[in-house]
Image (cartoon, one colour):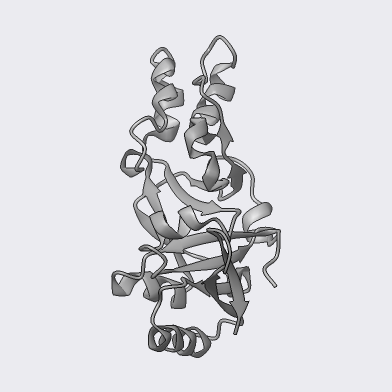
Length: 210
């Protein structure tokens, strides 16, 4: 069964790198300028009078996870219309929870608000972090959790014991499922495997464990 303390990273399986980074025990940290919401981090503009604070996040990187495995929108939007896969990471692992500060890796739950953070509500230090973890409420379905790194646009290693699940979309071909399972096992990753299935009544998906 999937664990409530896991966080999920969705991949479309459109390119070899999607499975290759999994078997290499790696994740990618994207620069904040490349995130798909044009309003992302706009609140940092309120720090124009604090260039040192803006500089702190100029080259920052973000890796995005979701707390939900069963939201069909996530599978549609981030896993190639249910043809990709999701990797479940143990959020309680010291790799995710033991580091502190912008110079280290750490996980933060995104806050969903329709009022952008401002200096009227936060100190400059507080505003910088609030800008990185606040999104409009229309994105709340993602239940997003973020790993912030000081420098983005790079791959980084993750401990093999953080990878707890590999879950395939309901539309992934069975032969492709078997291929990825073999690759994951060959890489020495001790994960549980499942494939999502459409529920018979309604519009949801649930995992069937393999």
